[in-house]
Image (tube, rainbow, N blue to C red; front, side, top):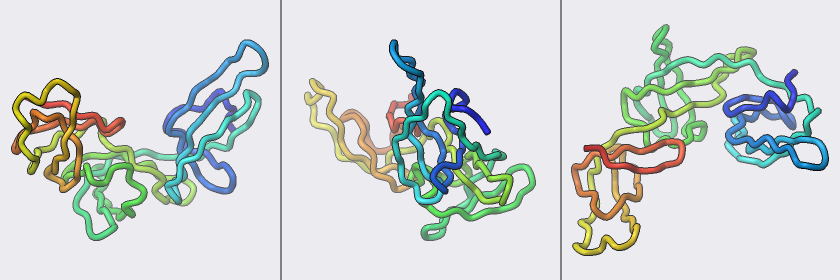
Length: 186
């Protein structure tokens, strides 16, 4: 058992008969009253996100997880296939367990957390950033740079993203997978 003060990003807990992963947290110490922790919890079974507040004295049941590096091999319909780089075992995961499946390219390394009690995968941590090529985008209009306008673009994995107007076909962009921010690589 852990307490509310042990809450951190990425911790897996058992709450309301489900397993949740903490994706955001904020420790709050008001001037009056006891401290508490505001959290955003993502269900690893359904993918839904809920907001919850834990009081300072609350006990939470944490789940023991083992995190391993896996290489993305290929996708087959709704299933994504990965290989453990340590022991070469392969697993197949549903598309819904991934945060941004459209940003994965073949050969990309991810971290997969596996429940040590039953051996089931709980969550997939994407790489911090992904470098991909823009395969199609409309040309920007000359002189239209006064605002921070964005235009749609298709990247090498087939995903649709929004990029600044000066990005052209064939350019390489770096996508921050945590906040989906884009920056141009030179």
